[in-house]
Length: 231
Image (cartoon, rainbow, N blue to C red; front, side):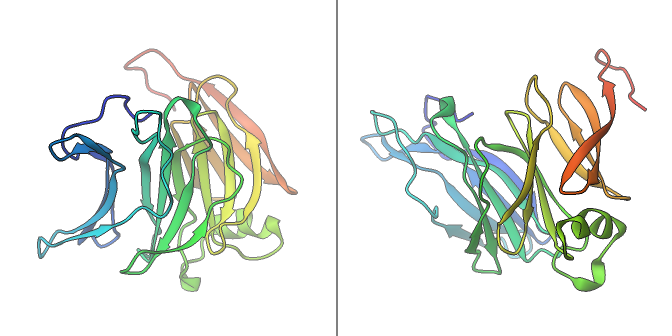
C-alpha cells in the first residue's frame, strides 16, 4: 500500500522492462515537492537505456487525496505485453480508500487506450497470454484459455491483494470472468500455463483449468517452511 508519509524526493515503486531490453518503464511514488512540501501524485517515466533519455507521462486520472492533500493511490504495477506495444499500468490504493484502477497504454506515446473494468481491489500481479497482439504468436494457452470465451482473444490475467483472479480482453479492457482464488491473504503471483491452465500463488499454490465460462480448481499445494522446495 502507498505509505502515509511522503518521501521528500521521487522514489521508484514499480518497474517493467520492455521486451528487447532497450527501455524501462518506471512508476514513481508520490513525493513532497518544493519548499512548502506540496504533495505530488507520482509519475510514469520511460527510461531509454541506450540514449539515457527520459520520457515523462502525466497520470491519466485525478488522483484521490486525503484531507491533508496527500495522494491516496500510486502506481503499483507495470507490465509490458510480449510484443512491447502495450503497457499495463495498475494503481494501488492506501487503506482501501477505493477500488484499484488499471489502464492499458499503447505505442511510443503510451496513449491510454483502455481501462480494465470490474476489479474491486488493486492488482498485485498481471500476465499477458503468450504472443501478445501478434497473430503469429498464438500458443497452446491461447487456444485452451482464449477460445472458451467464444473467440480467439488475447488475454490479461490479474490477481489482487484480496485474493481474486480476473481475465480481461487486452484489446478492449472488457472483463471476461473473475473468481475467488485465495480466501486467506492476497495473490502474490499468477501465470498462464500451457494446456489452458492458470497458476496462482498466495499462502498456497493453486492450479486452475478453464471449464465453460469459468475456472475450476484442480490442485492445491500448501507452501512449506522457509527454505522448502515445492515440486
